[in-house]
Image (cartoon, rainbow, N blue to C red; front, side, top):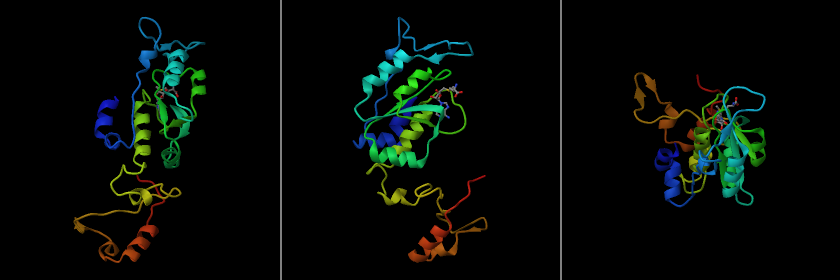
Amino acid sequence: MFEGFLRESILGRAAKKGICEINVVDLREFGEGRYKKIDDKPYGGGPGCLMTCGPWFRAVESVATPGCEVVMTTPCGKRFSQADSRELAASACHVVFMCGHYEGFDERIRTLATREYSIGDFVMTGGELAAAAMCDSIARLLPGVLGGGPEAVADESFSSSDLLEAPQYTHPASFRGMDVPAVLLSGDHKRIDAWRRANRRLKRGK
Ligand SMILES: C[S@@+](CC[C@H](N)C(=O)[O-])C[C@H]1O[C@@H](n2cnc3c(N)ncnc32)[C@H](O)[C@@H]1O
């Protein structure tokens, strides 16, 4: 699941530039018995299977470094935000993402995590997409990853408080009766900045 993403994404380019390094660990390698089992039925009954402790403890212990962040992906976690992304980009030099499957993790596996994040109030089949989304969001904040330098992220949505970015336009100046606000064509950067500040959206889209 990570191959295409790591090759094509901004993260892949960052890795090629040597700004960050990404390693994918196959939990199955830490599985138990002949079939490398990583799941079992829940105590007390219930549908499906849970991921078992042994493989997860061995896998995380094999990659963790002193002071690293270990992020468990789970719908029950704190909702991941741009503030979390900024914090991890600024302070963590090593982040381990735990991607769950089946019905999730045996509760004791949570003790491995330093953070538990959800990427939204919906349930996916596995944690890979959640880890990829968080990785992408963190990596683009690392110095040198985006072409435009720090300004590239300074005024975008959630850069300060919960404000979203101001409406943006490119050519043509008029399209099907919809005109670009005249101030943006004025070349007056003071007025343009003031307009952008005043028009940072407070409301979400439809
Ligand atoms: C089918 S889900 C498990 C759902 C769990 N039984 C529950 O009700 O909360 C399997 C795995 O996908 C990942 N996952 C699913 N939805 C997620 C979300 N919204 N955010 C982060 N991870 C998610 C987690 O790693 C989870 O352990």
